[in-house]
Image (tube, rainbow, N blue to C red):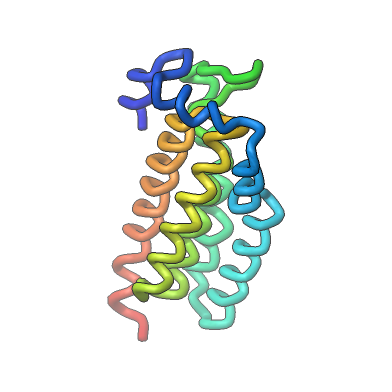
Length: 166
């Protein structure tokens, strides 16, 4: 994520410009996938399932990881200083949060093929929505990288507990 942030610098890239040509198009409806209300529903459902399964440590991570994601995204936005439309943009906080919640959902539900494929398609649609509206495409990629890193850290903290639970 850091390497991409330094590589793209303060402005847009040719690939960002290509995605921005669709700005104002019907593709803006794809923001549904990164909308905070949509993410809140995923968070509450994921948390409810973790609690129902009595996976207390996982339930704590379902709440804590998104909060860390938002905080780190804001910190990195100011660190990189890349702007779009007068606001700091890199990495995309909406994309970061969406990816974290999809990853936490996979950790709670399990790595069934249909769940993983659905999460990937959901994430790609959400990233496209951000890339044609509020963010550059590379901001969405930065959010994807930050989000997956945080999910990997959450999964790594669970690993010893996964081996000892039924």
